[in-house]
Image (cartoon, rainbow, N blue to C red; front, side, top):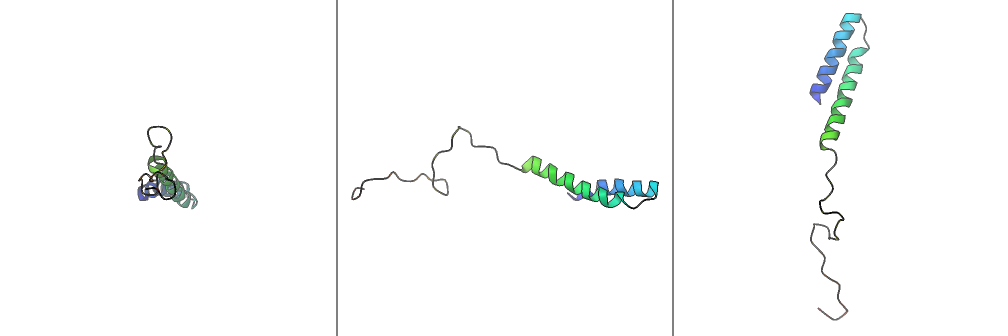
Length: 74
């Protein structure tokens, strides 16, 4: 994320020096941060759905629950 801010902030700084303005440097930093966050979310954002179609009924922790029995039975 720092490299995105550095590259786009540097490009904004160069434009500011060339055109004698003061607006492109902060805009470049914000744009670089936004692009970097987007790329991180696009790359690592969501886990793939489980293979095998529908999800099975499990308890927290991934173990299957024991089958229900009638009262008094084991």
